[in-house]
Image 1 (tube, rainbow over the protein chains, first blue to last red):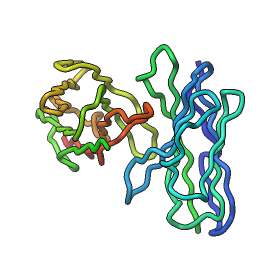
Image 2 (image 1 turned 90 degrees about the vertical axis):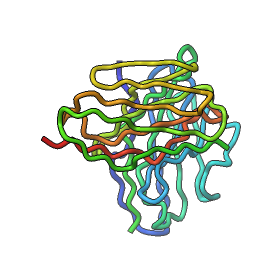
Image 3 (image 1 turned 30 degrees about the horizontal axis):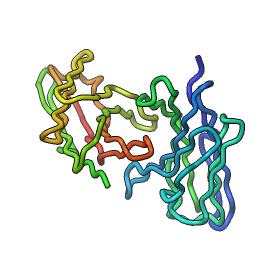
Length: 114
Length: 110
């Protein structure tokens, strides 16, 4: 079946603009994770959803970041008033209840803030 | 909080040689992962190790886990150019998330 998909694949935005990144997990996967990969910080965990709920948002880097998930499926990560340090590849992963240890990653969204 | 350290961070190998990448982690983790990443690509799962003494092999790669030593290894046998990539180990976080090491960039040269 289809894997995790993310859109857009690339996004260039001006500093101060808002951006929305989308993740479409594997059908039936209940858990969804957002990560960020940058040269300086490596791979960082941002937020986790079980169903539509995110029990802990402390991994989000600042209050400019927010995420939601609707219908237990698609998730959006929103960054308000983007800064240059937000430039990174944003990766989404999902896993199923029956195999919770297997996380499948999407292709990522490369965000460049100019 | 779990911390994961890999070494070496860079590894240049000749084809046909063997080598081992080491992954140490700071606190108890009930699982240990190895992922591969090719340039400009996403992460591909290689192995998930769930118990002490677990050993998994796929082709020229073999991963093992020693939970008492808090150490996992990824052994490469008779390296070939196609294995050139960055390899990440990761432990399990409290929310089921992955906590990654910095990655080992492997370059296999003829």
